[in-house]
Picture 1: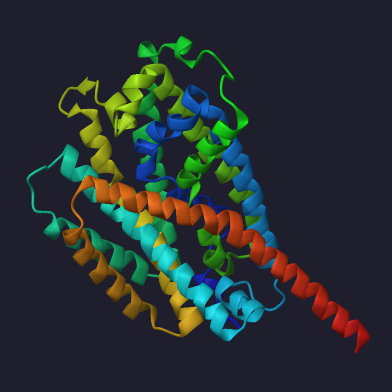
Picture 2: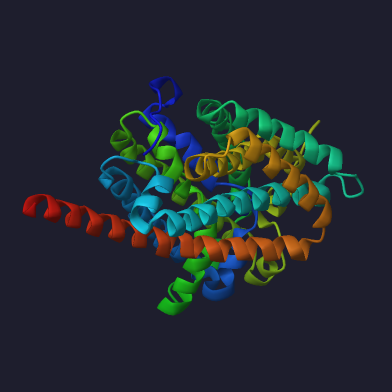
Length: 370
């Protein structure tokens, strides 16, 4: 059974907006346009809507799963009850590693971005250590500390990306979107699978749920956040389609930054430099949420002190960041994480929900017959 969590460590239901947004919107928002057009071309905006709708169903499943558990609202405990101690802990270990993997992909993606755009010849070991020390500070402060930082990260994200992307409006060509609906359903679904990577992060609710006061009231805020994120992705994608030709977009690694980079502002000179710098706090927060989830999962499943697992994770990140340097390897890691994430959210979550509901009915049947 879960350790009882005091109300002083919990957050208000509406505050779930900020952890969800910060965990779901990351470096991928700078690159996802190129991946989406591989299968569906400029009809890929439909795939964004398809994926957003499917994530709403998965979000509902998570709330149903965690609220249906009779004496525990933590996925680590649910796994043990559902699959037994040994198999349940294997699932829990996989979940912990999944969040550690996701945190590293976010962390390394930002380091590479800064190296390419700002300081190509700089030794980034000291910078990596500084970032990870800030992650340590945030995670060791607990869930309320992480949530507080997500508020600032969300504000910074909107202030940095929405106004700057809208500056491209005079340079857009709406006819780029034509012809409409010239791709098949299978092509749109393949594009939707690629888009699922951008929505990964909402699954932190599996471990965040017990820290929400009256968590059932947070569900409407979670769905509102998902609508907001879907509209953001849709806006940036459509703007990129109208700004670039399809051939240009296929050869652009960071389309969002390339759009912003056409503007020069007095004093600042290059807006994309300001954008990357402002997202420093955003990436720290995104990494911190995933690392916190991994530490929480390890504590509940294996009774490991969170501070110990936190230090081990950050040391591993420092070493891996020095070992992995080329862009192709980073891209391959992102692809693997995306593939694992798709199976995690579309297979594991429905599977566990069905298991919990079956177990619930079986227990009720035994009670009635006893």
